[in-house]
Structures are given as C-alpha cells and as structure tokens.
Length: 624
Image 1 (cartoon, helix red, strand yellow):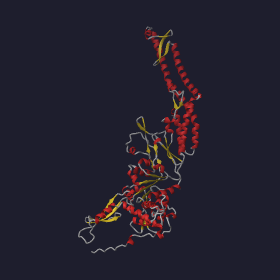
Image 2 (tube, rainbow, N blue to C red; image 1 turned 135 degrees about the vertical axis):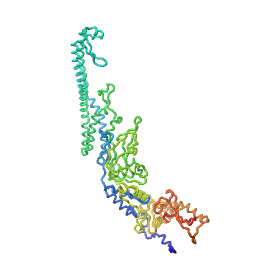
Image 3 (cartoon, rainbow, N blue to C red; image 1 turned 180 degrees about the horizontal axis):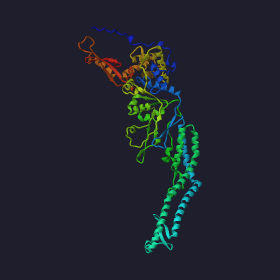
Image 4 (tube, helix red, strand yellow; image 1 turned 45 degrees about the vertical axis):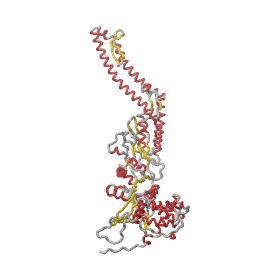
C-alpha cells in the first residue's frame, strides 16, 4: 500500500505574525494594571468554589506547570476571601491543676489571649508582694502564737497532771533523751536501781504497781499529743487560708470581673485561687534558722521559682493584629512546623518540659482560615503528610512528636489537650503528583475534593493579546522596568505562541514571559533606549539561545564535516525509523526558557535511521 505524501506547510502557516499596528496603544505605560489571570478561567472557578464550600473535605489542590502563576493566583483569591471573613479566636495553653501532664487549651475571643497572659503575670507579681506582707503582719503573728502557745499549755497541763499524781505516790516523772520516764522516789530523791533493790519486797511491789498504772496514764496522754498537734496544724492552716484569702480575694475578683463573659476562664481562675492557697509556700521563703518556722517570711523572686511557672499562660495563637481570617503559607512543612511541638530543657542532666514550652504549628496559626502548602515539599518530610491527613479527618489538632507516637521518646513529655480545627488547606503541585496521590492514596480524594487545573496555553484572540499586554504593563511598573512599545509587545506575543508550538495559541507560562521582558529590559539598557522594542526582545531571545546552544552547534558541525551522515533519499527494506530523546538539565540562572508545556528540563528531539542521527531542534518530547 502506498502512503499519501503529506502536503508541505508554508512559513505563514507555521509562524503567525502579530501586527503591531493592530494594538490599541503606543507603549504599555498607557495601559492600566491588571491582576486578572490569563487563560485560567477553569482554575479560577475551582478556587472560588473551594473557598465558598465550607463542608468537610473540600480542600483544594492547585495543579499545573511551574510558572503558570498557581501560587500567586491562589494567594490573591485567598487574601480577598479572608479579608471578608471574621477574625478567628485566640488559643492559649494553661496548666491543668488536676492533671499536670495534660495542659488545658482555652479558647478566647480574638485579641484577648495576650491580655490574659499579662493579667496572670501581674497576679503572680502582686502575690509575691501581698502574701509575704500578710504573713509578716502583727495580727497574723499574734494569732499564730496563741495557737502554738495553746498547744504547749495543753501538753504541759496533761503531763503536769500525770506528774502531780506521780509525786503524790512517790514516783518521779523525768525527761530523758528518749522521752518521759517514771522512777521511784524517797525523800524527794530519785532512787538508783541499786537503791531500789535494797527496798523491802512489799515496797518494791507497791512501786511497781503504781508505776505501771502511771505508765498507762502517761502512754494515754502521749497518744493524745499527735492529735492535739494535728488539730493545731489544722487551725494554723485555716489561719494561713484566711491570710491567703484576704491577700488574693480582691486580686482574683478583679480578674474574674474582666473575664466574666468567659466561663472557661472563670473556672481556670477558680482553680488558680485554690492551688495558690494550697501551695502558698511557693511565694514565701521560710527561715531555715528557725527550723522551718514561718516567723520571718520574705519575698521570693517569682521568676526564679519553678513552681510559679504553672500560673503562666502560654499564648499559642494571637489574632490581635489579624484582619479577617488568616492566610498562612508554610514554606517548610515539616511535621513539627505543621502540627506544633513540645520543647524540652536540660535540668540536672535530664530533659524536662512543661506547658510553657508548647510551640504552635502553621495549622494553629491558620486555624479559622487558610493554609497553603507545596505538595512536593510536604511529601518529602517524614510524617508531615500523614499528620496533616489525621488532623483534617479528625478536625482537631493534636501536638505529638514522631518519636512519641512511635513509642521512642525517653524523656518526660506532655499530652496537650487537642484544639478543634477549622481550616481550608490548599496544596500546590505538579499534575503528575496530583494523579499519583489520586491513584495510590485512598484518603486523598476524600480530603481534597477540588482540583484547580492550571492550563499551560490559551486561545490567541485579540482580548487575550490585550490582556497579555496589560500583564506586561503591570510587571514593568512593579519591577521598575522600561515600558514596551507596541512592536515589543507584538514580538512577545509571537514568542508566547512559539513556546506552545501553536500559532493559534498563547503560553500562560507567565514566568518565562516575565523573564523574557526582564532580559529585553537589560538589552534596552545596554543601548540606552527609553522603551523596549521588538529588536530588544529578539536580542534577548537570541542571547538566551546562544547561551544554551553548545550541543546543537557541535552536532551541526559534525553534520557539516561528514562525521554524522544523513541519508535523505531512497528506501531501505526492514529498517524502522525511531525517535530518541536526549535530555539534559539546564540552569534557570543560565537564562533558559521553559519548555512549551512547562516541563522542568530542556529537551531535544532526534530522528534516527539505523545508527545515523538527525538533529531536528529543541521541542517537547512526544510519543513516536
């Protein structure tokens, strides 16, 4: 069968010239700024849909080639939507006085977390002065002395009664290093053991009987002493409670009035007051020289005391300066940077921690708003992807280190109370990554139900050309570049079609077009020109080609020298022509252009007949 011979294409069919006279402006300086995306109507609609859908799982994956404006467009629409939304609440962690291992998370209206922290610092400073002063007061000292003297008199009275009865029976009650003892007397003198043995047996028996009875009374009295001491200590504690209550009541009432609209804070302040009363010693310095007696309490520096740390407030999220909902872009999405972490400090050779060392992650800061992540970076960090999915599915944020979740932590750690999570996550990545996740991760489709597919090309219409010109005008003003005249814009339009290898299309790879304008501005500056013309754009194209043209130049030289033989006529039986692709990495800093479909490598196409290679110029690799 004879195959039809394909018709030859004319140069006009391969290259469509953009007529500068058809552009309705002299230079881009005459055009207004434009923030509207070019050729991304489908992606824009997806972004708006994802922002508007507040139901569970409608998170967004923005997929498309690098350089099509994915991140800037997503951030633009997120910021616009966030500005119209309410500011989310603040979050703090406080000590749980019932279970110190599990810090409590408190929700406060936006802007009030920092106020609570300062109020608690003020309370501790005031108590560090008020409590020692209360225990140094004369009234407290007198009441305490009365209680202690009452205990002493009660003991003396009880032992005095036993001693008086013993005296009447000729028995002495004496104090020894090991306690009280009974001994027989005669003529007011205590008998020695030898003298006691010399007494008649009847008298010895009488002494023994009386001493045994007295011993029982003495033991009964001694057994009552601990009870009397406990009663006195209880009264002393009540006295201390009165002093503490008097010292802190007006301070706590003032704080409770400030937070009367927040029941959780009210409960926390009540627990603080109760704990201060039970641990008032943390604010006092007992006088060691007086045997631990609180006769001379002195102020103890609060900052130097570990016990005082439990009354602090750890502000996790402070939205006081936030206008609208937060929009957070996490550039380094490690697991701790996403979900937070619990830090430790060394203390006597051991690593310990408390709730003050809980640090927030980007999910905490974005709670109530939007979190933007690079999908490739996210997946490259261990545990980050799994913990993000867990948080989105559970709709709560639990701070847990990877070692702790795997049972590898040997240091003392915490289990902070989880924080409810309400966040819209936006992943930005390549199409291949999106399809791989869709195929291999069954949870991906459940959590990221919206895809914003960024196109790499658009129709070459008059409106699209004018939109491209406005985008170039915006770029030149933002970066203080020279404006382009209509010939320069026309040449950029032609190059945009060449990037996509289609005369009826324009590239939406704005990064490469922006680089082209920047390089053209450089050449315009070299020529002291006021505007960028078509000649400067062409000079930038030629310079970029020259910087990357070493391999092609060498191949063409080999063809001219006959080293590579090209057979262009005739036919060979049983020989199949094939296509091979030679790829090499090209540095962005070398001024390379992005390939037409935004692939991150420069590629060359080679046709082969047997072992003879034929150069066909740079292009995008396609299946043969």
